Amino acid sequence: MPAWEDYKKTARERGALAFELFVVETTPCADPQQLQAVLPKHLAYQREMEAAGSLFLAGPLSDATGDQMQGSGLIIYRAKSMEDAHTLAKNDPMHAEGVRTYTLRKWLINEGSPSFSTALSGQKITLS
Image (tube, rainbow, N blue to C red):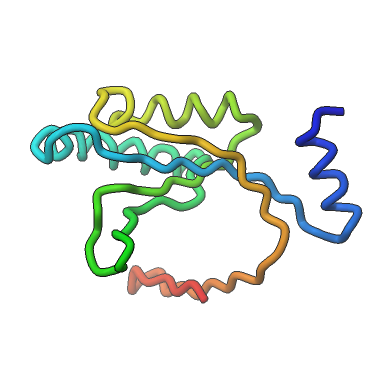
């Protein structure tokens, strides 16, 4: 059994969830005008992945102070494998057109208790 599968099995035996997601950290590598030009295609791709059930969460990251949005972003995909997750990330227009680079990691979620509250007509979601 591969080491990753063995780790998941052991986590489950200890009572952990062992829910697998794939985390993409995306970093700009082009000037702001180039990024802005690709942004509409990127957002359309995100909506498409969300509708397909592949996009779990996505959004920009702040700088170390938490005061400024630094240009990096985080995308969390649902995928069957690392290869499938790479395909999702590579097909994002930001990456496909070379205006952002990315790193991809598998994330095994074991613990936590997220709560969601939604107000659909108010377009509001609260995560606590």
